[in-house]
Length: 257
Image (tube, rainbow, N blue to C red; front, side, top):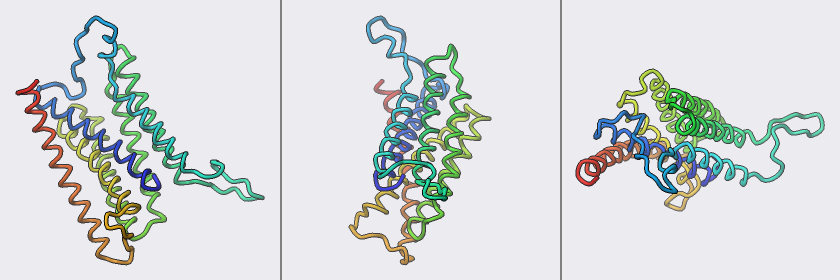
């Protein structure tokens, strides 16, 4: 996730995935549906009848993983190898790129599990989907911790805050394995997915395309303080957005739909 695009695209993927979960839990609260098992469209005859029965979330995950991996590989100059073979040295190369690809592979596998469970198995296995999701987020946490080893100043502070959000998200998805139908956990999961995604996008702008046009100075303590302030604003923005999603869903399902 190096560079501006490396922060923007994963951030958008996580943010919209959290927004999708916010819609799911809002619909479950309003319509009294099980949050994991939304009703399918009724069977209808016609050429596109089968397509109405397909869940597309897993396919979107797979497509997103391919796009993110392609973007990562596109930014690599030279031969992409794991270990160099210069003389008698055996050094690991492209360590961050390999970490990113490992993360994208976890998301890809989660998407494959979703597709198989939701569209191919005779009976959907939600526990399997949640397990794959928890595994992907569990891998995200140590990879992000190792990312901070070469960071300092604004970059370090922003990634520490990001790691905090990921850690809380990991706790939520793990707790969800034992309480899969608890709506409070689904609300928190939507919140932390959106929070992680929006803050990842913010990091991209702060480090590579600052609004002021000037690079953030690592030796200025005011910049470090403002990074934390911006993070708190993202927390408030995400909470307001979830409330807005619930309010819009309430109007849609109770008065429009």
